[in-house]
Length: 361
Image 1: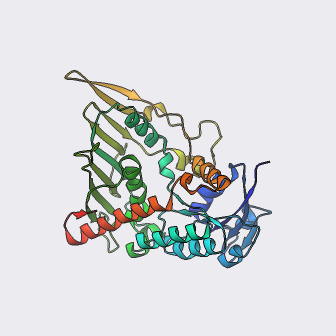
Image 2: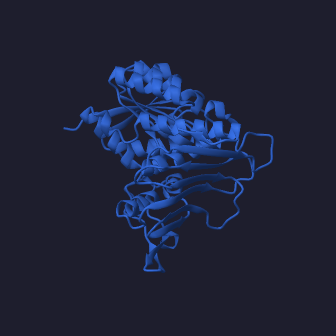
Image 3: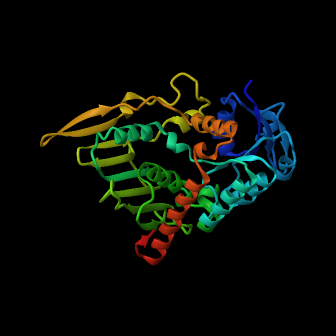
């Protein structure tokens, strides 16, 4: 009989409610055992939402519970290092929301600790399982576009008001702001597709024009490897983008191009109460399909490309459980070392923006 793992969740905000608790619920070998919620209210209560689940007010109470096997850290980013360290030292496997931690050095410390403690550590970079990204990855594997020379990945929105959550209020030195919130997703996808870049150039802007920290990002990641000579990856996140159809990807290669608008539907579906396994979960409308152009001789031919079959965000949890079952850190779906590499690029972007020069990696 397959083992069932008891899961403790630290934090009970949007990340826990929208993403993690629903995905734990649809993973057959996981059971929501404990939630750490410091200040529940009548309208925001884990105990009310999940009768029978243990609710405690401190992470230490969770760490000391021998019945808890896996800790999921969904608190604000500046707390991730301490909570992850405490969970690993208590002998728990850990899954951490993005951004992993504020610095690449802290990421390395936690990676080293997980190896010493023989516990597995995973980072929740769920947008590797965006269905449009998986569609691009299939085009890439099939060499449909030829040698890719430009890859643009966008997370543009119209958000004229600064949010009062950590994404709008927490400074970059504490892993807040656009580059840690949205940039982690975009950069992670670039690294999954192409590996580490050779050079990084970055700039920030405050498109809202208020007194807060930068809210928008443009970064250029340059490659010069054997298989990606001349590749330029552009990472963009904007908050003042008044469009009816936001650009998501624009990929150009020697044989063709792929252009995709609209954000993956899974987050909105989770907010609406759908979950993996429900009818049409992860499936977008046909009108949201991407455009493929391939060269036939000297003539460009356009067609519509529907997304591949969704794997869904549940795949991340399923693969993490498989890694725990097998005791194999090599099959952890998002390794701490990969999240460390993303943080290394973020630090280079920040240094580039500060010094107004290109940073070599």
